[in-house]
Length: 180
Image 1 (cartoon, rainbow, N blue to C red):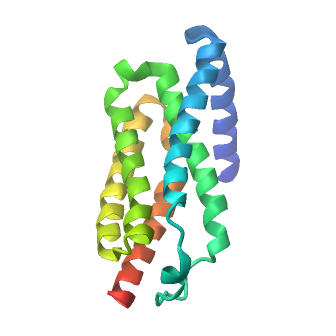
Image 2: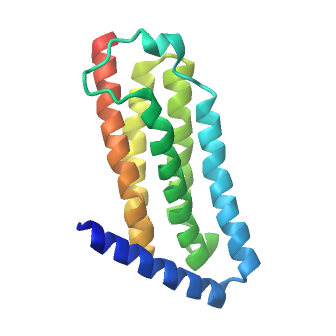
Protein backbone atom coordinates (compact mmCIF):
# COMPACT_ATOMS: atom_id res chain seq x y z
CA UNK A 1 0.00 0.00 0.00
CA UNK A 2 1.28 3.45 -0.87
CA UNK A 3 2.84 5.28 2.13
CA UNK A 4 0.72 8.37 1.46
CA UNK A 5 -2.47 6.33 1.60
CA UNK A 6 -1.39 4.69 4.87
CA UNK A 7 -0.51 8.12 6.30
CA UNK A 8 -3.90 9.49 5.24
CA UNK A 9 -5.74 6.52 6.74
CA UNK A 10 -3.85 6.81 10.01
CA UNK A 11 -4.48 10.57 10.20
CA UNK A 12 -8.17 10.02 9.49
CA UNK A 13 -8.31 7.31 12.14
CA UNK A 14 -6.62 9.56 14.71
CA UNK A 15 -9.25 12.23 14.08
CA UNK A 16 -12.05 9.67 14.23
CA UNK A 17 -10.51 8.19 17.37
CA UNK A 18 -10.45 11.57 19.08
CA UNK A 19 -14.09 12.26 18.23
CA UNK A 20 -15.09 8.74 19.23
CA UNK A 21 -13.31 9.04 22.58
CA UNK A 22 -15.32 12.14 23.31
CA UNK A 23 -18.54 10.28 22.50
CA UNK A 24 -17.99 6.83 24.04
CA UNK A 25 -15.44 7.20 26.82
CA UNK A 26 -14.56 10.07 29.06
CA UNK A 27 -11.21 11.66 28.43
CA UNK A 28 -9.85 10.31 31.71
CA UNK A 29 -10.96 6.78 30.77
CA UNK A 30 -9.26 7.12 27.39
CA UNK A 31 -6.04 8.44 28.95
CA UNK A 32 -6.02 5.62 31.49
CA UNK A 33 -6.76 3.16 28.69
CA UNK A 34 -3.84 4.17 26.48
CA UNK A 35 -1.56 4.29 29.54
CA UNK A 36 -2.73 0.80 30.47
CA UNK A 37 -2.02 -0.66 27.02
CA UNK A 38 1.34 1.10 26.87
CA UNK A 39 2.17 -0.21 30.35
CA UNK A 40 1.26 -3.76 29.31
CA UNK A 41 3.41 -3.72 26.18
CA UNK A 42 6.20 -1.95 28.10
CA UNK A 43 6.11 -4.65 30.77
CA UNK A 44 6.61 -7.30 28.10
CA UNK A 45 9.43 -5.25 26.55
CA UNK A 46 11.03 -4.85 29.98
CA UNK A 47 10.76 -8.58 30.67
CA UNK A 48 12.38 -9.40 27.33
CA UNK A 49 15.14 -6.85 27.90
CA UNK A 50 16.23 -8.73 31.03
CA UNK A 51 17.74 -11.37 28.76
CA UNK A 52 20.53 -9.61 26.93
CA UNK A 53 22.36 -11.19 23.98
CA UNK A 54 25.72 -11.13 25.75
CA UNK A 55 28.73 -13.29 25.05
CA UNK A 56 26.68 -16.37 24.16
CA UNK A 57 24.94 -14.60 21.26
CA UNK A 58 28.17 -12.92 20.14
CA UNK A 59 29.76 -16.36 19.66
CA UNK A 60 26.95 -17.81 17.55
CA UNK A 61 27.44 -18.35 13.85
CA UNK A 62 25.11 -15.87 12.13
CA UNK A 63 23.87 -15.44 8.57
CA UNK A 64 25.18 -12.46 6.63
CA UNK A 65 21.76 -10.80 6.77
CA UNK A 66 21.74 -10.53 10.58
CA UNK A 67 20.92 -6.92 11.50
CA UNK A 68 23.25 -4.93 13.76
CA UNK A 69 22.43 -5.17 17.47
CA UNK A 70 21.68 -1.44 17.75
CA UNK A 71 18.71 -1.81 15.39
CA UNK A 72 16.62 -4.02 17.67
CA UNK A 73 15.87 -1.40 20.34
CA UNK A 74 14.43 1.27 18.04
CA UNK A 75 12.47 -1.25 15.95
CA UNK A 76 10.90 -2.93 18.98
CA UNK A 77 10.08 0.42 20.57
CA UNK A 78 8.11 1.45 17.49
CA UNK A 79 6.42 -1.94 17.27
CA UNK A 80 5.40 -2.00 20.94
CA UNK A 81 3.90 1.50 20.69
CA UNK A 82 1.98 0.49 17.55
CA UNK A 83 0.79 -2.69 19.26
CA UNK A 84 -0.40 -0.74 22.32
CA UNK A 85 -2.24 1.77 20.17
CA UNK A 86 -3.89 -0.98 18.12
CA UNK A 87 -5.12 -2.71 21.29
CA UNK A 88 -6.27 0.65 22.65
CA UNK A 89 -8.34 1.31 19.52
CA UNK A 90 -10.12 -2.03 19.94
CA UNK A 91 -10.64 -1.58 23.68
CA UNK A 92 -11.80 2.02 23.27
CA UNK A 93 -14.40 1.15 20.67
CA UNK A 94 -15.61 -2.23 21.95
CA UNK A 95 -14.33 -2.74 25.49
CA UNK A 96 -13.27 -6.10 26.82
CA UNK A 97 -16.81 -7.44 26.78
CA UNK A 98 -17.43 -7.03 23.06
CA UNK A 99 -13.86 -7.69 21.90
CA UNK A 100 -12.92 -10.50 24.27
CA UNK A 101 -11.68 -12.82 21.50
CA UNK A 102 -9.57 -10.18 19.75
CA UNK A 103 -8.04 -8.85 22.96
CA UNK A 104 -7.41 -12.38 24.26
CA UNK A 105 -5.48 -13.14 21.06
CA UNK A 106 -3.56 -9.91 21.53
CA UNK A 107 -2.59 -10.79 25.10
CA UNK A 108 -1.70 -14.38 24.12
CA UNK A 109 0.66 -13.22 21.38
CA UNK A 110 2.14 -10.67 23.79
CA UNK A 111 2.95 -13.47 26.26
CA UNK A 112 4.70 -15.51 23.54
CA UNK A 113 6.53 -12.37 22.45
CA UNK A 114 8.02 -11.98 25.92
CA UNK A 115 8.77 -15.68 26.29
CA UNK A 116 10.83 -15.73 23.11
CA UNK A 117 13.57 -13.58 24.69
CA UNK A 118 13.66 -15.84 27.73
CA UNK A 119 13.86 -18.99 25.61
CA UNK A 120 16.46 -17.61 23.20
CA UNK A 121 18.68 -15.30 25.23
CA UNK A 122 17.89 -16.51 28.75
CA UNK A 123 17.85 -20.27 28.30
CA UNK A 124 19.92 -20.42 25.07
CA UNK A 125 17.31 -22.75 23.61
CA UNK A 126 17.29 -21.78 19.95
CA UNK A 127 14.95 -24.63 18.96
CA UNK A 128 12.40 -23.81 21.68
CA UNK A 129 12.59 -20.14 20.69
CA UNK A 130 11.94 -21.13 17.07
CA UNK A 131 8.87 -23.12 18.08
CA UNK A 132 7.69 -20.13 20.13
CA UNK A 133 8.16 -17.66 17.28
CA UNK A 134 6.27 -19.86 14.82
CA UNK A 135 3.28 -20.07 17.17
CA UNK A 136 3.70 -16.34 17.82
CA UNK A 137 3.54 -15.65 14.06
CA UNK A 138 0.20 -17.45 13.77
CA UNK A 139 -1.18 -15.66 16.84
CA UNK A 140 -0.14 -12.30 15.41
CA UNK A 141 -1.83 -13.16 12.10
CA UNK A 142 -4.99 -14.21 13.96
CA UNK A 143 -4.87 -11.01 16.03
CA UNK A 144 -4.54 -8.92 12.88
CA UNK A 145 -7.58 -10.60 11.34
CA UNK A 146 -9.62 -10.20 14.54
CA UNK A 147 -8.60 -6.56 14.94
CA UNK A 148 -9.18 -5.77 11.26
CA UNK A 149 -12.77 -7.05 11.49
CA UNK A 150 -13.41 -4.62 14.34
CA UNK A 151 -11.23 -1.67 13.33
CA UNK A 152 -9.24 -1.63 10.11
CA UNK A 153 -6.61 0.78 11.43
CA UNK A 154 -5.94 -1.46 14.44
CA UNK A 155 -5.38 -4.37 12.07
CA UNK A 156 -3.06 -2.35 9.81
CA UNK A 157 -1.03 -1.15 12.79
CA UNK A 158 0.05 -4.75 13.45
CA UNK A 159 1.27 -5.47 9.91
CA UNK A 160 4.82 -4.10 10.51
CA UNK A 161 4.99 -6.32 13.61
CA UNK A 162 4.09 -9.39 11.55
CA UNK A 163 6.68 -8.44 8.93
CA UNK A 164 9.38 -8.03 11.58
CA UNK A 165 8.46 -11.32 13.26
CA UNK A 166 8.55 -13.01 9.84
CA UNK A 167 12.09 -11.75 9.39
CA UNK A 168 12.98 -12.72 12.97
CA UNK A 169 11.56 -16.21 12.35
CA UNK A 170 13.84 -16.66 9.36
CA UNK A 171 16.78 -15.42 11.41
CA UNK A 172 15.89 -17.75 14.29
CA UNK A 173 15.71 -20.67 11.85
CA UNK A 174 19.07 -19.75 10.31
CA UNK A 175 20.65 -19.53 13.77
CA UNK A 176 19.19 -22.93 14.63
CA UNK A 177 20.65 -24.48 11.46
CA UNK A 178 24.03 -22.81 11.86
CA UNK A 179 24.39 -23.57 15.57
CA UNK A 180 22.14 -26.57 16.23
